[in-house]
Image (cartoon, rainbow, N blue to C red):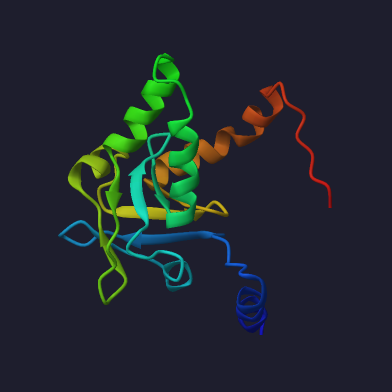
Length: 159
């Protein structure tokens, strides 16, 4: 029933399902990853896989990637942080191509960057998907509370 409501909302208002949850999968011998069925709908051949900011990988659907590239193109190339971010994201970027079984190939250089060898966690981040080596993901989760507590920003949710 919830899938019907989401489909109806998407048809009426153009709302797409968001990426939520964690999924554990194994890479096959050719470095291919099975994308969970619930994620495939938003991952057309225009989706992009690239390096993430935390030694992970990120899959951006076409619209999210367009937003990222627009923001990056507005940053001055004379600023060292802007250049570093552009280098990180653009140099590693590859266009995804899902095969008939819903698999994507992850290039060696991206697997090396994220220290992914066999098991990989796909983590939904609303508008994009993060790919993690499981030990790194657990370490990142262990730091979440302290990162939020140490932040100079007040975070609040208006429910």
